[in-house]
Length: 289
Picture 1 (cartoon, rainbow, N blue to C red):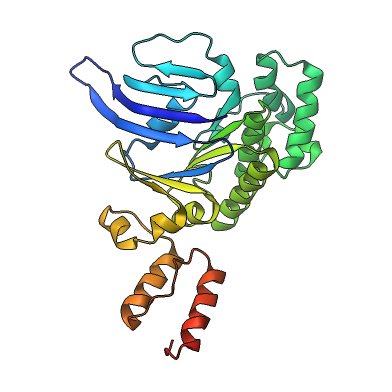
Picture 2: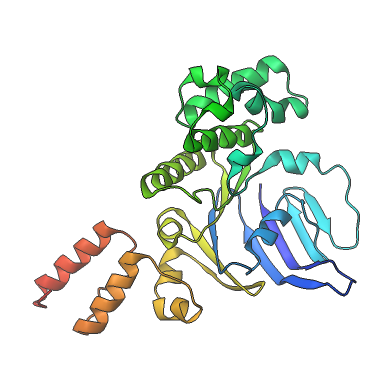
């Protein structure tokens, strides 16, 4: 399912003395199957943009096309449930949204609310609990008896139980240690590939954006500043730094190396393996590393 934003503007509390412009003239295409990372400072409009992707917010100007549905400014939309079924959002700290007596009931709540039979919803719960890396016996436990990391996986399973075509992730690894962050991101990337999902990731981790995304969009003060592949975006680290953004540690090391030794490695390296190979080639050309 393709998603297109055309000249999207959003103002909080429009028409009041407290009006605030959050998004301005956003034009963005997200083709089916894309893994898009959205980066930018706090307050740049990232979360506001995400809420337009399943019509939780409607633009105050412009339009958003989600599959075969178009949500336009100035037009009150009805029957938005099918959109919200196809576009699942995992908010920050999704474990805070758990509320049922058992893990199974929590995972089943969403699909049953959309008309899926109890039997089919329970079947989805059994399959998904394994896909998010938890044993089946967890289904009978209270979600509040689990660890924080396990609770997060249960909440993610609840979103996946809706069988979305698009998965929207708002800082899904917030508060996790490096190992937990890597495990969660590897899980999302595996699901992205196996299920053919479109995945939109808001993150402050430049490493995650570099490793997993097909494309990266940069928001600043509610405007879309840049969009391109990780190679394109991170090939100009000085420009990102001028915007007050970090770059992946590998990219930063390469930038400092090239500045010090007055050489170019030929391409922007996004992983340790790429950087190691590029440095070997530099040494082969006679530069002392």
